[in-house]
Image 1 (cartoon, rainbow, N blue to C red):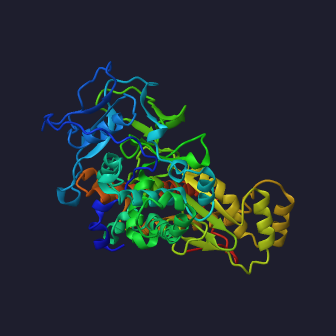
Image 2 (image 1 turned 90 degrees about the vertical axis):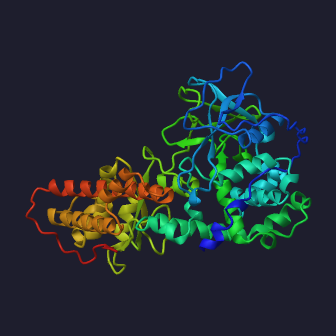
Length: 524
């Protein structure tokens, strides 16, 4: 991604309004004085008691007011929230306007309905395409829901001020897909910024996701021809002629950052763009509140008490921090779902996050057993009998590193068995492969220790250096969020290393030298 391709197109993010036309909002008198002082732009019921906004967060009527007026004019019921502002730290030379976020407009208690958005204000594939069967066909073929929504938004964006949803488009343009840390997805970072992720599998995840977006871009014309009734109103060229790839990618990333995954709805309605939803809402991994579809609307019940002016928090789903950064541009330090994946196999053992085959794995690289091992088929049979595959993924969950190492050891021990009698004994027994001998167990654990140390050495900074940089508090936003990600990855790797060393300490004879193994796994 060239720097010029991104830096010059931030203002061109293509954000949505939808096809089903609502009555045009009545023009409002401009005689009302717009105050320069910051204040909360509220969406309160007339009976709601509004408290003061947080001193660090305020909103100007000229920015959030138009969006709020548009929502209320087009059917949003009065709620209990306000749209406030937070400053953007040192981004683009200090030229960025503050970001908006949804906050409590009054004191709230757990279980209160913060707001309720009617489905007439929610964008889904069912609404965009007008035909649920077409929506299902498209998304089960070569195009994702995100690609379909992004294409629709790009054409709607071309309508400019003629769009009846112009205030919503303008609001999402202002956010540019940035989350609560004011950072975009690494998909939009330039090469020098991606260097902040050196040593992390995130570098390769960005490449893989970018390639996936490009494949979908090449299939966009399919949507044009299959849903001709949708696009006949737009006097523009077919997608790949009307929009360059970089513009589509910006639209895709914008949709990815604000789409809501609704539960217990039809396939064509499961991905939705909800006004007052993300990125205006603040995501948190240990929260229980989530947007839900109820009786023709999307509703948010809060899961905790709030004081007026406090950001409204919602659950972002059980996603590791790598996904949170890639999708929403933030990292959650308290994420109980954070994890790294280790994949092990008997033909080629790939260690990488989420992917079975990676050409340049970063997190735990790759390993392979000698394919000339005469006992390969027997070892594979034992692995399958114990619920493991020829290529097996092990999830290292935060705080459970020792449990994962324990789960891996029986699988890895198979690679150190060379005696046919030992192999037959294992075949005739049930359960996981137990330690064959102290020397072979030491060999397995030593290999893990050496490998984990080499992986940690692959990062350009140490864990202590990351801690020091974050404590100083002067990092540029993208470097800060990247440093937080790699720091959490290193902590999990250190946890695995500590677990392996503890198992070594528990061996009965510390003087035993590791056994040589003719077909031992090779870790790279």
